[in-house]
Every structure is written in C-alpha cells, then in structure tokens.
Image 1 (cartoon, rainbow, N blue to C red):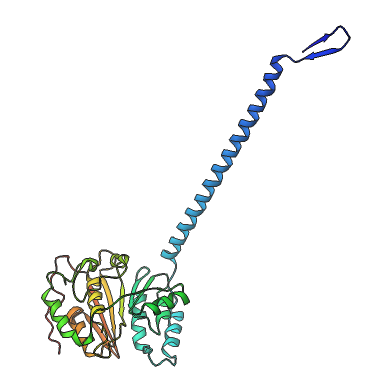
Image 2: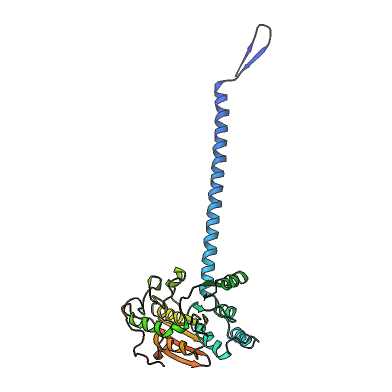
Length: 303
C-alpha cells in the first residue's frame, strides 16, 4: 500500500493488487467450504432416511415371519365365543375347531383361502395370526362393504357362471376334459375349464395355499351358482402347489348337501377324506406331478 501526497496536501491511499486478490480468494474458499458442508449434510440425510426405511422394512418382515402364533387359550376363547353366538347361520364348535386345528399345524404363517364371506369372517382372520387370509365372495357390493368396514380384511368378488341345476352336466364336461383344459395341475388363469375360476386376481394363482375353506357361494335352490366351481378350483390350487408344505387342508362346509358331496368325491376324492362330521368335510390333498391327468386314484361312484 502506498501513500501519495498531492499538491494540495490531500493523501491518496492506493491498495496493492495483491491485497484485492487475497480478499477475493478468501471469499471463494468460504463459498467452497459452505457448498461442501451443504452437500455432505444432504448426502448424510438421504443415507440416514434410506437406512431407516430399510431397517423398518426388514423389521416388519422379520416380525411377520418370527412372531409366535396365538396361544391355545386365546384360540379356544375365539372358537368358543364364535360358536356360541346367537347367529343361526354360524358354524358349530366342532366345525370351527377342525379348521382352527389345521391352521395351528402350519410350520410357518399360513396362506388361508376362503370362498364365502360369512359370520366367521373376522374369526378366520384372527385365527390365522400373522398369516395371509383371503376371501372370495360372489357379491361385489358386500365384499366392498366388508373391506371398507374392516380394512384388515382382504376380499375379492368373483362372478360365477354356473347353476346348481346344471351340476351333473358340468361335472361330466369337466371329466371329459380332464387331460386338457380341466387338468388337476395347471394355472387356472389361462384355463377355459367350465368349473375353473379364471377371473381371480392374478397373484392368487401363484400363492401356495395351506388351508382352503369352501363356504360359498350359495347353493340351496336350482338357479343358485352352487359350489361346484369353488370345489374344483380348490382341488386344482391344492394340487398345483410349487413349494412349501406339499399338503393342503381343504374343508367343504355344508358337506351334507348332495351336490357338494358329489363334487367333492369327484375332485377332492374320497381317498383324501380324513374326517366328515356335522356339516364339514375335511380333505388333505397332496401336490401332484405336472403331467397328472386324474384327480383321484380310484374313480368315484357317487350317487
């Protein structure tokens, strides 16, 4: 820095160019430091959020897999109060207990498929603690109502094209196509079998079901859809399992109804019937080879 004195005595102060450059350089360094710290903060924030999300997802998955089942005491209480309600359409204690026992046999959370939204809907969801419980019903409005009222319920509607009065013809047609469209092992999503339900959500055909309950649709008068399609579909899903336990428990409620019993004999097979008491038929089916062309080892002679 230089001091110059003009002729009138006024002093002029001149800054050396080096000082100006030094001040500009300091500002650049400060700006660079602030930018670096900001970037580091943002990266740390993003990493922390991803880490928390990943940890939460892992924890939820682990909880679903390792959480213990309901205690026997809780299970007994649920079954007791459900079977002793005043609803005239309820299942008996014996019928409910058979299904409850099958759910408790699962070595891991059960995949439980139910045809029909009934008085026991909330009970099935509660008994299959930590497992996946899916309901299929013929009434789209009722299915939507149940899902809205109970968000924890997973329900879907399906349109049945069958009539109870046509059951004999439908069963005969399926038996004729047992080596083609109506094979016991197949993905029904791509099937044209008359008794195969092929309009369920696609994902449901990929699930290995451990327990299946047929308690719908309606089948008490000639024009009702009957349960032929539900029973046939349950038979195919059980035999088409790809992994997990090779056995599937299939329950048919109202087993005392003639058409339900005949259809069960044809596709679930008497050789697989382990118990028939009150209004419940209990079958245990095993996974079949993909090239299988017969449902039963011994042809039925239902009457």
